[in-house]
Structure formats: structure tokens, C-alpha cells
Length: 153
Ligand SMILES: [Zn+2]
Image (tube, rainbow, N blue to C red; front, top):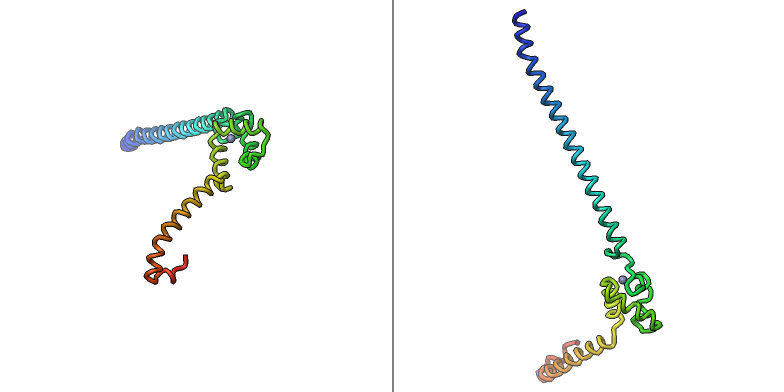
């Protein structure tokens, strides 16, 4: 009997302590999980808020109405703009738009380059002429030495 009560005295505080620790641990973990979940929700809300801000303020790559014209319309008429075949008003609108809109300006510059603007062609032929002149100068020596006849240029 004495030993039993001794055993109980030994085990009871220990058990309670263990359970208490376990419960405390579970509580802590749950609190951490709740905190993490709240943080995730807050982060998501912030992201949604930010993207909403960008979309509505036109800070993203969306349709910004610079020059009273939106990007979609600029891109749709970019060919004619480059070819200078638009009416003066639309031409002005696009010109005004690409001053403020990097995306459209870059796109139009790219299209211009692809269409081989006269300026670009001139530069290219100048370079070609230059190379030809230099090559001609060297070719004389090469032909003279009999090496050039075997080179396909
Ligand atoms: Zn644009």
C-alpha cells in the first residue's frame, strides 16, 4: 500500500507534466499553424491588392490609354503607322502614345527595323561598299599572287 501510494506519487506528477507539456506543445504548434495561415492569407491579399492596383492604374503591361489610344489599337495600326498611311489624327495619337508607352515604342521600333527602313538599307550598303573597297584592295594583291582565284566570296 505504501509502495503503491509512493508509486502514484512518483508517476502522477510525471504524467501530468508530460501531458501538460504535450498539450502545450500541441497548442504552440496550432498557434504557429494559425499564424502561418494568417500570414499566407495576408500575403495573398497583399498580392491581389498590388496586382489590382497595377491593373487599374495602368502600371502593368495592360492597355494604357496614352494619347487617347490603347496599346491594342496601336499594335493593330502599327503597320500603317510605320508606312505613314494613317490619317493625321491617328498618327498623332500613336506618336503621343509611344512617347509614354515603352512596350509599344519598342515593338514599333522592332517592326521598323524588320521592314528595313531606307536609312538602315543605306547604312548597310555603305558598309558593304566599304568592305568591297577594302576587299578589292586586298584582292589585287591576292589575285596578283594567284591565291584569289580559288576563293569563293
Ligand atoms: Zn502602348
